[in-house]
Every structure is written in C-alpha cells, then in structure tokens.
View: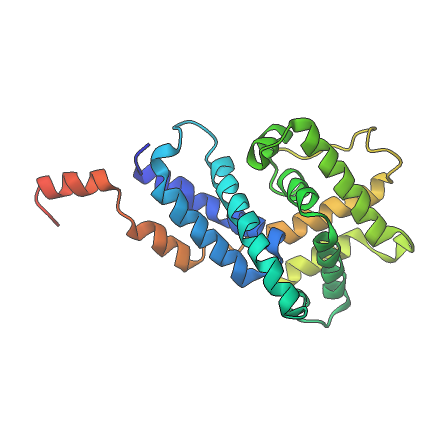
Length: 181
Length: 63
C-alpha cells in the first residue's frame, strides 16, 4: 500500500519497540540503531509490499530480524578477528551491584543460541503471540514454543543454578528503572 | 500483546525463577521502549514524503 500519513505514524509508533528488539538481539546500542535505521529505510522502500490491515509491527520486526541475521554472520567473522572487542562493548559501565546484576542477565542472554534468544524476546518481551513469532522467524509454531522453553531453561541454569536466593527479582527492575533517569 | 502465562508444561522449572527471568527480560526491553523515538528516526520518517501527496501538492499548486 502507498505510504499514507497514517501508515507513517504507525511506523513511527513502532520505533521504540524495534529499538528494544534490536538492542536485545545485539547487545549494542549503536549497532542496534543502525539496524533500526536500515529496517526503516527498507520498510519505506518496500512499502508497496505491505498488505493493508496486516500486522505492521510483525512486518517490521521480520525485516529487522532478517537484517540482523545477515549482518550477524558477517560480524561474527570480524569479531573473531578482533579478539573480543565486541564482548567489551557488552560490559559497559560497571559499578553498582544492581547494574552488575543487569549485566549478568544481559551476558546470560547473549549466551543463548540466536534462535532461542530471538524467540524468547519476541514472546517474552515484545508480547507477540507464538503464531506471530513463528511468522517473524519463518518457522513452525511448535518450533517457537520449544525454543522459548529451552531459552528459559538455559537462562535459569545460567543465572540461578546456585544461590537463587542471592537475587531479588524486584531489585533488577528497580535498578533498570532508576538507571533510566 | 498479552502476558505469557506459566504453564505446567514448563517442566521442573521453578515458577519463581521463571517469573524473575520474565521480569528481567521485560525490564531490559521496556527500558529501551520508554526512551521513545529518537529525533534521528522521527526526522528520517518525516522527510520521506508519500509520493501521492507530492503529486497532489504539485497539481494544486506547490507549497
């Protein structure tokens, strides 16, 4: 469909969640914003292929996810060449305990296989249904369910396998919220 | 856009741990969502005029 003002507003309204998805996938804010920019340019260039009335966020997330995956394959080789510089960008701003806890969660998330990480984010954070997540990832609904379950199992093993009581669930939430200000 | 409800099928996973993971995941995500739309993207989308509006504007006298 043509780029109407309404559609443009809808795309704009999707930007915050596209950024959250990109940052959750890549663990790197600058790279995430490049991904979002590329996604928007592609979406606008291919707006004619968007079906009116279909799920715009799912369409945009599909573009971003595919861009990330093709980009990821390229970068993986670069990262292997550059001795973990990418890993360093993941551990910014050490300091407060609560922030450290957040970083631990982030690091655990990054240890998940990519298929599981994206499934968990789409269903557990973006709020997509299993059906939408399956469409975004181009796989069966059952596959998404099993990836989400495996992601949860692995995260709990990484984070809480011992000393589960050391972590306060609310402290992380508070820390992230207060760091926001 | 609804919450994921814990199901019995999630095996022997401790429900409390699962709830913590859910909280942490959403906290990380929502922190970015709350940042809104950076000017860079608002500009980018604003600057791309819909082609049909351009045509109409040109016909009716440009502005």
